[in-house]
Length: 322
Image (cartoon, rainbow, N blue to C red; front, side, top):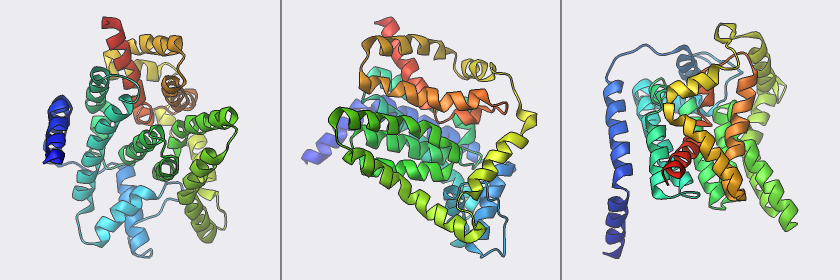
């Protein structure tokens, strides 16, 4: 009875959050009913899944792609489920989880109002809303990134490192958003003069990567071949997406006009000079800078930083009105 009362209290207290999640899921479900062709990247992930689970008899293979998401789609295909339909249902669930995790990560730093605004902005970010329905790897990778961040803040360093490793194996570029967590642990090593947390985090992060490197060595006779190929492709392809430096700044403003309040949020965080609060800033900046410097620019590349940006934006809004 006590557990039921606690659950009811949680539901009542977080009713606005559940309302946001319900609206998001309903809108995505309606969108799911609209027939549409698969995007090329989504088709490749599905083809790779078929290739993996048919021993090369069906589908196709692109070595430069991370394997986690193709394997999920491949499992759906192998068991006879419609990978497009059920893959889309999975991504809707993962997107809803991203909204919830944005709220939960924000609650480690700020109050309910700030966290609710951050969840609302994340839910109706045009980029996140669009890529929920196109069956690509951005949303699964973002889910694992936010889950890893939440576990990290709860001091679950082994679980966090492993989840971050899965996020990296879902989309390679997520590693930029993970770097600040390594830096934070190095800071703790220096302050506490103990490397246990850093080693536990690093070793657990390397578990998924190790299996991937071994597989690469077996298949390509080169453990880092996919990374080298991906690096080459970032330099030699995608010229049609070349954009000026201002592309993302304008794009983020179009995405949500309220991001202007992130400037106030950043200033407030720096002024308070609290290490736990400032951890958000490196995640956002390090996830942004590499993509801002390369010519190939697409808004989907910024998905790893958007929840953190919206947390800071929400903090700027509540700070302004206070």
